[in-house]
Length: 64
Image 1 (cartoon, rainbow, N blue to C red):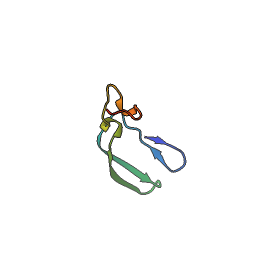
Image 2: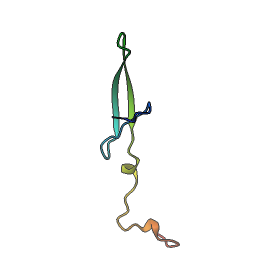
Image 3: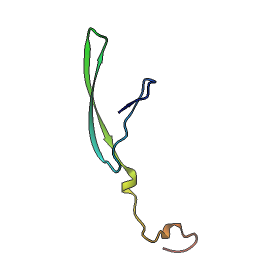
Image 4: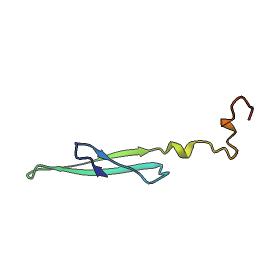
C-alpha cells in the first residue's frame, strides 16, 4: 500500500495475481480508535487473454 498523500491509497498486487485480499486499517484521533476491514477482489485480465503463438489475429484480411 502506498499513501498518495492526497487522501487516497494505491495497492499494486504482484504480477498475475488473481484472488481476494483482506485489508484492515485503523483510524485514530489520539483518543478513540476505529478498526475496520475491507475485502478486495483482484482479477488480472491479462492472464485471461488467449495466447496466439503465430499471432494470426493481427493478419489483416487473412483467415486464421
